[in-house]
Structures are given as structure tokens and as C-alpha cells.
Amino acid sequence: MNYCGLNKNDIANGEGVRVSLFVSGCRNHCKGCHNPEAWDFSYGKPFTRETEDEIIEALRPSWIQGLSVLGGEPCEEVNESVLLPLLRKIRSKMPEKDIWLFSGYTYEMLQNEEILRYVDVLVDGPFLLEQKDISLAFRGSRNQRILRLRNGVRI
Image (cartoon, rainbow, N blue to C red; front, side, top):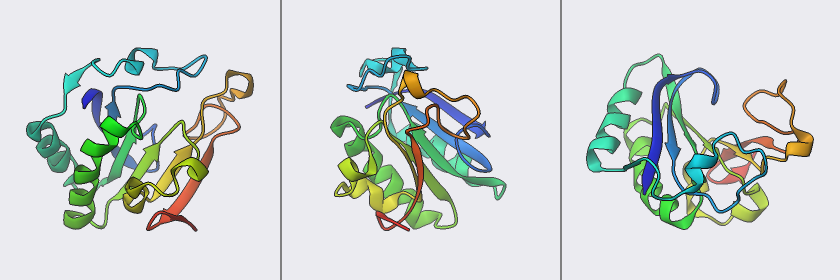
């Protein structure tokens, strides 16, 4: 997996101050996407053990609320296979940190995916240019939802 960004003090992609990881690769290709360069799976840098360690270290301060994972598309199979061990480690070592996942897929499409077991908040749905609304918190179009999860199930 490649990633195209790592923000260690993000306040735009979830509640509180967060660490945000932007993964590369997306097959959705939403019209009007704010990050079309991240559609390319080879864009950015390879995600390494050092990258994982850097994320874990960035999450340590008490004032960091959690991790946000965005894209590209985190739920592309190649990305999900790398993200799962990272999310498991964060959940195990830092259970007080929350995890937000932003996906162009809907909850209904992802509900059987293992990755959701480690996610506290799913922002789901494709970006729809016709429903763009800059007044919305943490999403770009009205069709997208902010869903609270527990063990992969909506609460």
C-alpha cells in the first residue's frame, strides 16, 4: 500500500485533534473528487513499518483523540489488508483512541468487512458533485453519512 499524506495535528477530518492517514488508490473516481491524484495506487510513498511506528508515536499524546483514515479509498482490498494490522494494533495498545474511516462505499456494502470491527465512526458514501454542500461537517455531499459503530455494527 502507498499513502499520500500523514497529518499529525488534523482538526478537519473528525472530532478533536487527530492523526490522519491518506491512503493511495481508489477505483470509485467520483466526479469532483477533492483528491483525484490519490486514485493512483502507486501515488505517494510506500507504507512501511517505520510509517506505522510514526503513526503510533503521533497518537501517544493525550490531546490526540484518534486516527482518521481517508483516501484514496481505505477499503480497496490492497489497502484494507495493510490497514487491518495497524487498526488492530491501535485498538489493542490505545483503546482510548477512536478511529474514523472515510469510504466512498456505503455501510451496507461494507458491513461484513472485518475492518469495520475496529472503526468507531464511518463516514460513508461516494462524493456526489450534485449534492455538494460545504456547510456539512466532515463530509462533502449530502448523501454521505456519519455513522457510529461498535464492533462493526451501527449504534
